[in-house]
View (cartoon, rainbow, N blue to C red):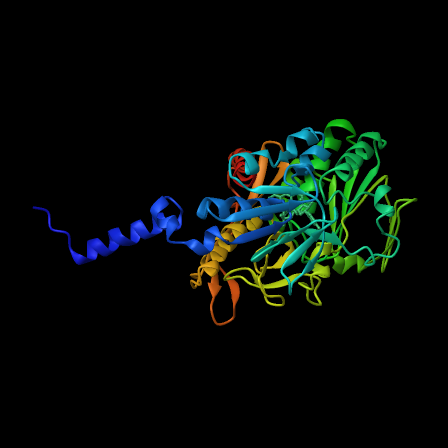
Amino acid sequence: MTKISRRSFLKWASTIGALGLFGCSAGHRATRPRLNQARVAVVGGGFAGASAAKYLKLLAPELEVILVEQHAAYLSCPGSNEVIADLRPLDELRRGYGALSADRGIHVITAEARSVDADKRVVFLADGSSVRYDRLIMAPGIDFRWEAIDGYDEAASHLAPHAWKAGPQTTLLRRQLQAMPDGGVVLITAPPNPYRCPPGPYERASLIAHFLRRHKPRSKVLVLDAKTKFSKQALFLHGWKELYPGMVEWISAEKEGKIERVDAASRTVYTEFDEHHADVLNVIPPQKAGRLAHQARLTDESGWCPVDPLTFTSTQVPYIHVIGDACIATPMPKSAFAANSHAKVCAAAVIDLLQDREPGPPALINHCYSFLQPDYAISITGVYRYLQAEKQLEAVSTGETPMDGDRRKEAEHARSWQKAIAADAFG
Ligand SMILES: Cc1cc2nc3c(=O)[nH]c(=O)nc-3n(C[C@H](O)[C@H](O)[C@H](O)COP(=O)(O)OP(=O)(O)OC[C@H]3O[C@@H](n4cnc5c(N)ncnc54)[C@H](O)[C@@H]3O)c2cc1C
């Protein structure tokens, strides 16, 4: 007869426990009455919010999950630099919410959330209705600091697009590139930290150079930076030299000083020490958390939302969690990969908290790819752990594509990742 040791029994028992936590046993579900009476509302159906809603339902199918998103479909920013460079249509970046409602049982409401009453635990929607919650997960993404650069407000962005939210701004920038004369200058202003997608402006410069090399080979791309260094810098500089010699120029804040003023009509940027005229001007303005986060008093003086990354609970307002670009999860960058990672940790923690259980310390991952041309990509990666005493994250391991790494393979992985993350969040 096989004897089961106490040790292997405990191991076996903990496996069953883990299965129960993931909602695989109907019997176990019956022992979690709080979950089948609880309601979690998620505001914002981007990579963060859609992933959170889906993983809440995967972990606890009996939980009521309501996702409030202002648009009927989502347009992904990852891939949008390829749209600008005419490498793919914008429609390929569109994701619907049908699978989340039909297959996952999430109640999706298409409406703008206008305000939150944190005392009564209610979200008020633009159509006059409201959503009560036991816990609220806020994932409103970013907004722009329109007041930060003199002359660059929302109206100016219709002349000099930011294209930092995918949609009409993306197609406007693409149209302007197509219409510009050969021999012209494309000027990109890169924002100060922190901002959405740290390597994004440099991927954009690369793919625009790729477009120009094919269609307007006497043209130039100038990146005027508010910073003195940037993500994957050595890899980008190496790639520009190799692929686009003399075509892409990066100007550090050390050389030019602050970007002081923009005249969108004449496409001119004034810095502390100089002025630059462009044929196509792409201003990526300084950023802050999405508007609703400010209304709900979730932001601090930085304009972003402080959280305890153990659970992504706001440190300012009870029963509200903030994930994705809107939260401060340093040293993680603001990326779709990171947003998806926050969402999973937050979903598991919310389920623990609803059952008065202490969530365990999380580990999070980020991995960001950037294309320099369609068959040439680089990436950066980081693993983060939770520091109990500081209530903060710390990078335990980071790395990037080695100088002699296989850029073609990275490009294949980047493409697979884009498909996988979309399926993980919206599928
Ligand atoms: C050009 C570019 C390229 C990028 N490439 C990559 C990449 O390769 N890899 C990567 O990991 N990341 C990339 N990113 C970053 C990535 O897009 C963001 O980090 C990610 O979208 C953050 O997800 P989020 O859910 O926090 O915000 P968002 O994706 O912005 O989603 C927020 C959602 O909330 C909704 N919303 C906001 N306010 C309300 C409200 N009041 N009521 C209802 N709904 C509301 C919005 O409509 C939106 O759908 C890129 C970004 C850019 C700009």
